Length: 231
Image (cartoon, rainbow, N blue to C red; front, side):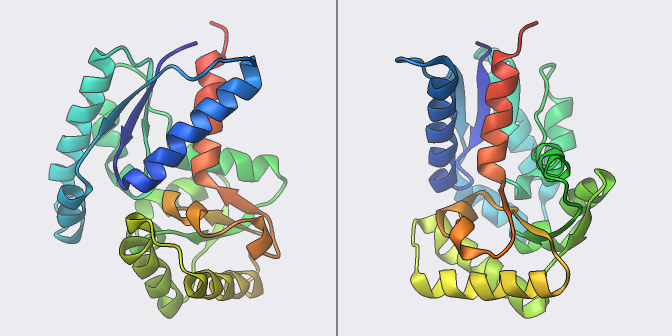
């Protein structure tokens, strides 16, 4: 099995999900006591979040690029950025290493296409929903992407940073997310991308009338597929 390199800590709540999923999926594929070969570089999210708010993306990219280099030096055969939002600096990270970067948006677009759907809603941080680095990549992958109205985007973003990243899961927030999803479906969404790794801590298939695309699980599954792929 190839070694999977994880740039995590953004937040550590979702990175823990990555670790669990990678190991469960590897066990399911190989059986017995098998677990994933992986190395993790966990950054201080407070530092990254401060740079996000100040739009100092290049500096944040430098931190993640250094993390990727450390993972490659530790033997990683591929790199995953364990957050949707920080794929804004994916090109900067990819340029810093010689091993492949498994891009989360590409994995997600492939999963949506494989399901036979094209028109999807996107939930995530305000950066992910409103900027082109992620949505544009999905659209380049053949998808028609819808995002919530301004009020819905504010709710989704606030819950991520003020609750989910802190491990807080509130029923009131689940209800609010359900309403946002209903709005996306009313706007024509045939499915909804959970485009923030923490959202999967709050929302599951029972919360949506249309298929959900959980990006953490999709990313982890693609990493295991790649790690077990024969040369």
